[in-house]
Length: 447
Image 1: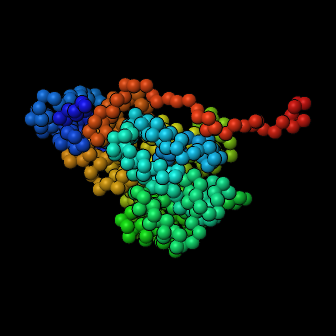
Image 2: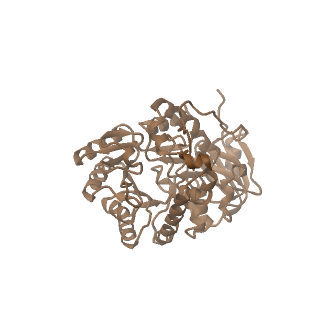
């Protein structure tokens, strides 16, 4: 067994702390084990004391920064192109194998921590524990289990059953079941309890609120009593306000947030993960993969309608976290984890350094770590670091190009970036097999 070096000395790089302050030019960083031991003048001396086996990394002309923390990643979904594939083309054992295969891609893309708030079956906690045990290589991970839904459903409409479980969903019949299931999820390893507050109904526009305030409080109060935070999918202003009033700790999307909802969020002290990336990918690139033009305009409008008020939320002190919603065909693993920062800059008007803070320092909450203990380049923090070609403090798009990653350190250990990108062949029955993309009518055939 090869032992780890006594430390790594990174010299001469421009250091982005992750807190949003200006970079420090030509600064040395020394890490030992899973701890940043020194930043600045003492780094070289402490590395010398550590012994001759210290690994040296010359970062002159490069940028040193915290690893990215993706606060919204569906690692067990396996990149489906539709809810049909997600609900009916994933068996438990195959989904687990795919998750173990795909999670390494996050490290190769500079993601050193992520939250998977809801998963297929109980794959999330099992994968998290396998990563921590060294069985599967991957970033630090926190996980929920199935998302809690009422019988009115969620974003998959009538594919979601009236009772029981399917794919990522666990349907709640009454308040007692909400309390019991919350306790069960925590018992079996959930770091977070996720609630699908909004969902789609046939012949209704947008997503509607599917929970009452009392029902939401049944979950949040139960989770909090067991020292576990709650996270909520909210794609309306009403749902966002209700979730905040119910004590939800983190809100995904907060779509169409308005002033009353913002006031509730500020008063409650919860954070928001906008997750614009899925919407932006569909709006900007959907035509390249056959997306419907109606969907393109719908999601572009959601970004425009949400971003301005979320900027107000940011300025009011609401923590904004970066989440990519990787796990779908529009957001494959390893490709789009940094794009959220680009949209935070272009749509919300954040500076690159503010956007980087959303994807690093603020991400500590997603990992259930105290602020300043991870997602920062500071003495005593976890040793998750990137060494990047280019200056993300001026242009965050450099983080979206994996070729700009010169080094990735996860838990103080170097990630092998030299190998080939993980590739695989399709699994039998994995994709929907269509006979046709349209109806072959007599008129069409004759035309």
